[in-house]
Length: 170
Image (cartoon, rainbow, N blue to C red; front, side, top):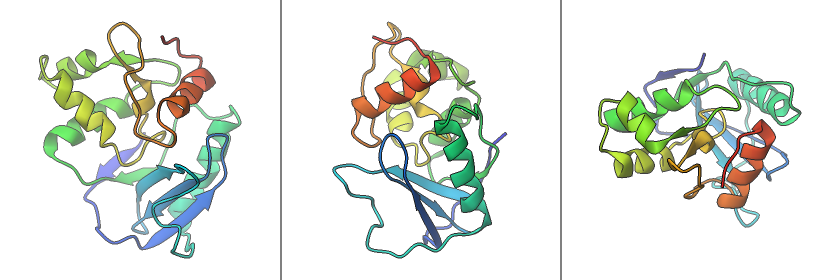
């Protein structure tokens, strides 16, 4: 299972890969994956920087390729993400969602001890710095509707990920 440790602020390592949802950029501090960005309008956050990979990014790239090929259902990588304690509690809940399963924002609110914090949960889900690996795409409204997605091209990217995992949605 993925584990979280404190985040380093500098992007020390960077690796890009192609995927069915566009180019992906992975960042690392050398020990953990610190970020994953999906290209939006042909642009990645660190396009101007040269790639400099490391062992953890090579492992992440391999695991992502396996996921997109349909051969991997969970990730086993060290993760490091900066956020509030509440955001981290939401991301830990996301990390426990199995492949092919979805939950609602309210479900996550209840699991984090804040059953009426749906809007705050939505903000924390949207702020997830390591999408796909920390599967924020598996969160839907209580009626199984897609309410948004901050990665890649937004909702079309989320729809692709949900279909890839066989998750029903509206």
